[in-house]
Image (cartoon, rainbow, N blue to C red; front, top):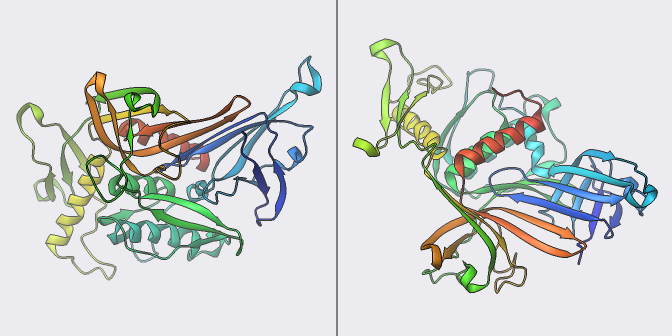
Length: 382
């Protein structure tokens, strides 16, 4: 059964509802952006509303919203029957990628410390919701209340893509982030999210175990790799030569030690009034910078699998993206607790299916996010 979609204008006016498209799939990403691809015959009702910058709302799920960014069509010898539009777009939270982090006028870097949620919302608020330059403001966007969730974070940013900064902090803290619809007030709401702990062995929530042996997985692919692994960061702050401040993050030795150098000269040693910061605060900032970089270079271990649509576990009831579940294959001798980081929903004439990624292929994921963001923001990356 195909899920109906509603087409909305940027002002949140409903332009049409469609349930007879040819096919549709979309990705929901906990750390990254996600996107949609839709095929529909151009002669079907409301196909003419699928215009660039209009929104696609999937069903009544206010957290499944995509902005149209691409349209194409071809005509072949079969005529009208195959004259289909190919529509592509990004999740609504891609609007965050339209801004970079602009530091305050009186300081070189925008520095912020606090819970991960507080820090993430600070950069979105300062660059999209309530920026100093009103030309940078996105009028539809509002901020959900700050519940101060997540680990303590010390962060500095200067001329970085805001969405990329969100992804980095999301990976480090485990918090997800999204922009959802507030239909009643015709607003877009930025918020962060916490997944549920659904692993085997805990008793707070009903456990969710994905396994071919339990008839909950149709297919499974497992990857374990140290190709990009680093576990010790040599972090260098301000200063020159032997006077440069250098710290070490990580405590490994011998063959198990994998080092990386991080140039953190941008970490401030003075406050906004040019007064020296306490040494322990500077060292903590350098330590946090090193840990953030190492979080992107962890051992690569993840599973990708297609979840059976008739699985014992119901999607968005028993589990959803962002939840931490147990995945196992008894025959392979593999069992791991991992977050569902991405979910792909596929709607075709033949039916509905779900594909999921468990855990983070971190180096690959970071590169994928950066590539996706460079396409959205028009940045050139080398």
